[in-house]
Length: 354
Image (cartoon, rainbow, N blue to C red):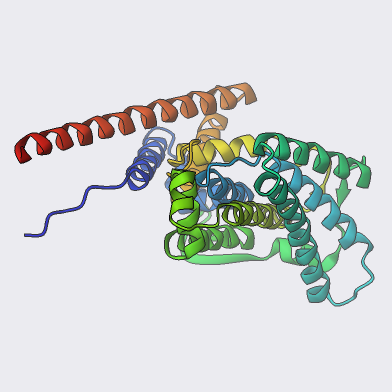
């Protein structure tokens, strides 16, 4: 009989995150009932947090490589404001063309930040925290320069896109008046799921993804394996910037208005989601599937608290902080125990060999 291979650290931490999400959602169904008993509640979590899921993937890619990027929230804010102003001022009558140009504008902004920050971190070897902190301030400042007042999108074609939802009747529910209400999923949520799948395939099967894991695991070992460390780190920041721009476009599809406070603190939520999903700040361990469930755990906590008597915002922040601390301790305990177990097995094997 073939011996079963043990789970890797990445798989183990991801499995723990998935298990905690299932247990948390199951508890909400049992004790709160209501919307949690309907499949639409899961769709609502996806619809409301699609942009967070995307930037959680962006942070996970960078963090696996041993870096950090705290500018993602500012890039989203700048992207939303720039795209809103463009849509309101565009003279293109063709809705498809104007929306396509808006998407390219969003991706272009994210790509510009990704290239700039990636170059400074990878080739000039400036600390990533400092570089992305400057990127966060720059993007927030540019957002305010574009407009100090909120800008609501009035473009009819884009408004039609915002209202477009994918209906799934067999996952719906029956209202009190007897009408069948289908489950509705926004386009942005579909985009977020696609990003998770593509990011997973990239990290799992593409050479660049394997190089990012190697870089985060041990930079010296990666150099000895012939990996171009600078280019790999640079590409991780380019991907992170590109996904940040896409997240801004998805945010605008969910809330078609721009202002200077858009996605405030979302970079912290994305880092928390990545860590909860099993990504280590030291690099080399992580998975975008885990980051997806990390974002869903944070969203579920916020929903549970909003439906409870303790519905003030600070309770949500406290719960998120406690959960993050719990996962950091859990990761440390689990990985430490695994390392000790491996060391004992290696020592026992060495004694038997002698």
